[in-house]
Image 1 (cartoon, rainbow, N blue to C red):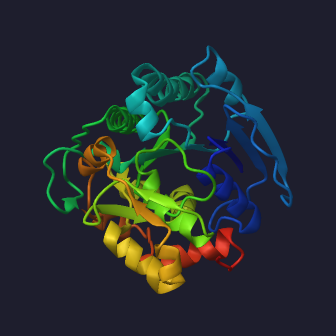
Image 2: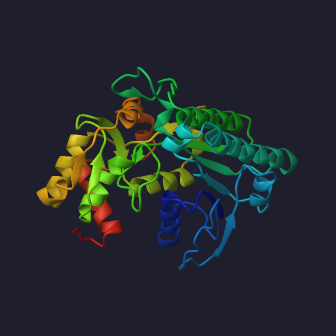
Image 3: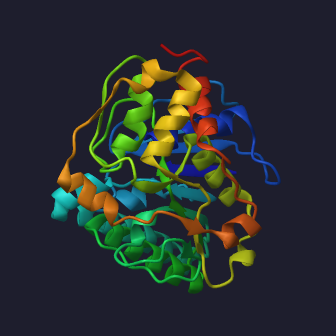
Amino acid sequence: MHILIIGAAGMIGRKFTESLIKTPLEGTTPVTRLTLADVIAPTTPTGFSGEIRTATVDLTEPSAAERLLAERPDIIVHLAAIVSGEAEADFEKGYRVNFDGTRALFETIRHANQKEGWQPRVIYASSNAVFGGNFPEVIPDDYILTPQTSYGTQKAIGELLLADYSRRGFFNGIGLRFPTICVRPGKPNRAASGFFSGIIREPLVGLDAVLPVPDSTRHWMTSPRSAVQFIRHAATLDLAKLGDRPNLSMPALSVTVGEQIEALRNVAGDKAVAHIHREPDEAVARIVEGWARAFDPQRALALGFTTETKFEDIIRAHIEDELGGHIA
């Protein structure tokens, strides 16, 4: 089986690739080929018994998708996007990458399907940003899409395209609405949600972190480990069980910033918490306030998607995976 990962140089793309090398997918034919694609050159990992090819590609460029899909992969994992804060700051770039690039990919698959019957599985990374405005405190599975940001709108369009192209039989699609991923390793990115990771990641290594929102801010979060498991499960799930609704809200934890901080205190003590500095930022607070705070993801849970049960587990997973089990 051949898997193409678009956005393979990003954090989730790298971790998903590593997981495929470490642990084979269950219930499928063996993965013998991996194609890792991104706008920057992905690193070629070691330890894979099959063939690995890397590609530097921008889906918004003419014929880029055709070149990338020439070898007709069996599964396409579409993670490539620019994040929320950047998409809001640069309107044209957001639509070019998050919408035009996605449609170019889907259209290329459609043309190949109509010409030769190729029908891959497409796993599309969406976001809880498709919900906004005056939504209920806990969002049910049947709630309508109500994005209030350009990023959320772009992801909602992607979901609708995925559903329509799947309905028409051009490919077999599943859309995963990712919660905010916490704790993200590495350096901060331009996502407006970045501080949710920053107030944990930096203090664990003895660095200061800025908190721009009130402690009462509630959000929906899961770990990188769980995010990778979502993709792995989507790669093997019987998609017939999705019916005519291929987009799913993923399970996560609904926690306040204050609860995050107390979990950090429980795991790493007062010394770590002392590195958090409150510096209110109205622009960030306004964006975050418009995001969903909790979901009731019964469809995803019934289909076997799982996540952590307490925020301390998310922190400990970060310590194990990124810090070698040790903290400052």
